[in-house]
Image 1 (cartoon, rainbow, N blue to C red):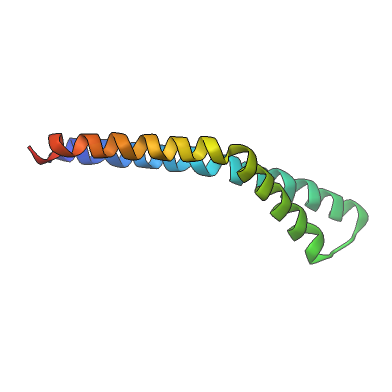
Image 2 (cartoon, one colour):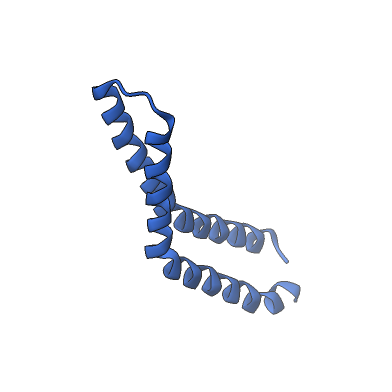
Length: 89
């Protein structure tokens, strides 16, 4: 196992983590920004007003992208296990 292979695995791992977290984080960011904008325009400061839409939005994002996320993670894991014999040599 060389340092190049370790860096390559770490790089792929971070890229997959970024891909998997992006739909959820972007959804929460957009909904949070819209709710904050609404709260600042109406001067309504209610905690549940910002929390409940985020939970619903993140749940919907998981529902729509969950299959793709699982497929991406399984593909990465299979590729990682396929690399094990080459890493041990």
